Amino acid sequence: MFSSSTHKTKKSTLSFSKDEFNILDSYVIIEGRKYHNIDGLGYPLPCDESEASRLILLHYIFRLIFGGNFSSPISNLLSAGGMTILDIGCGPGAWVSENSNNYSKSTFIGLDIIPDNFPSEKDRLPNAAFIQCNVLDGIPFPVNTFDFIHQRCLLQAFTIKEWRSVIGEICRVLKRGGWIEFSEKDLKLINPGPIMKKISNAKSAANEINPYVIHKLKEFLKDTGKIENIKIVEKIAPVGSWGGKIGELIFKNTLSSLNGLCGKIAPILNIPMEDYNSLLNQLEEDVNKHQTSYRIVRIFGQKAF
Ligand SMILES: C[S@@+](CC[C@H](N)C(=O)[O-])C[C@H]1O[C@@H](n2cnc3c(N)ncnc32)[C@H](O)[C@@H]1O
Image: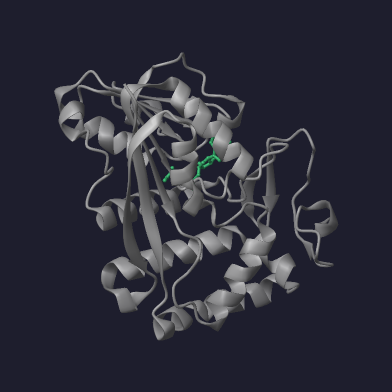
């Protein structure tokens, strides 16, 4: 057992079961889920197989909702070939794998701090590669390397200061005329019911990351003075079967993500894990009754020539 007083979520007096824990270990196990144990890294989600499956589902959800894997006007260039593309925080690499298959004449590199869920060597196409790297330490490539840089669902990974530093690095390694694209979920829910409100308020309190940073990304890009033609595409993501098949998938994904955050949210609510699980069990009815949804947003722009 470990006391939550040693955990970042200090408000609770509850304890959560944790396997033997060594400060030198790369991972910690909390409530049967595996998390990184990297000093100074705020990213709160697990990094086990179950999370990898959730991220693969998330990939299909984003593609379905936006009707494609990216919104930047680059598909002809990718098809023509010779483009070099970086995916920051690639997770299990679904975006890289699919695009390296769709655009076999361009080269795709996935980068993630946790390499465990990268596709195995035999599942990678020759034009796809994966590297382990903490993007907060810089992007380990020379200036003007990439034609396109994609980054999806890292809202919970960076503070505002870190966002600015990552964007600075992106501008450095992006070629002139190259495109940068962020895909993010707006953490502010539309029509949350009482259960969803309770859980998401606790989630915000547990997270030291500003949940509204999504509204700042355009400004951050503009402030570099290097990115122009900035555009935003916004879609609505229904949560629950009230929104049809896609809503069912989004609900499944949401539930899995909230399960992965159990060790952060339950201490804030000051309830034991059984009560947290019981709240999650009531969530489906809650989202369907209130027709809960959220916005997902793509923000993209071009490095000036
Ligand atoms: C929510 S997942 C999104 C994965 C993928 N982009 C997708 O959309 O399916 C966030 C990923 O960012 C990675 N990550 C978090 N902080 C990072 C950092 N500082 N440097 C590199 N990767 C990081 C995590 O390990 C995780 O795989």
